[in-house]
Length: 363
Image (cartoon, rainbow, N blue to C red):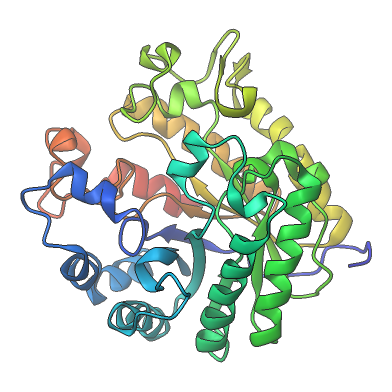
């Protein structure tokens, strides 16, 4: 891709459907007694009414994360009884005038458990056996849905390669495989280390004119993830507001320091500077297709965070996909989450978090 002026494009605005065809174990853990089993969950958790909601609220797309082990055998053969749910997602999104971002959330050698327990995920090791498996998965997905022009293919969720050079090489292989089977589809790919903005300066563009680049953002984690049960660091167990000074921050996986210093709208502009520079240099459309605040955090502070972030994204012509539409501790809708039963923002028959929905719709 040569350097040129940004071209006009549609700035996308949408919601994630996480927990439907991915991270189902996290749904099960919250209410194991009522969990209906994987296949029944896929059939009932998201329905036509949910696609109608997204459309009626004024959004233009859904991002649908999938975990490959739910849809493919160990030999990368498709499990057709599960694929009917993905087929339904593709059909319902088209029926309701929505684009669908098909996100490979977990795949062989790349999953959340592996990220927590392994110094180098197998997908990014010298042995490319897992990468070949991921290529076969993308060959199947892109061939199956490549003729559906409202479907966009996202190469991999939140890569954590040891170096950006390794991720750039892996990213190019995955994108080439998608393009081989879906010559006209938009491909989405992002930066290394959880698609964080700070690594965009090391991201090489895929040499293709129909690519969108994605970034994820949850900083300052000490605010957005305070008291989240899946984080164990003592710094995350402190009540905090936004904007604020978060001091020295804290250290997470790979010795990376998060949340250090003052966080406010100016800091967001600073953090997204590498992303905006990439956008301007390559004329590439960008989407922040994951961001959010853990639902129990003080609501008024959440709304200030959303207002600041969304205004910065809009000023930079960066689209968004909010995490998450339903449940998983960030849901616009929360159903059957005992931890959040008494939260006032869900105190209506539909269990819709209207304050957060309203701020998203503003932008």
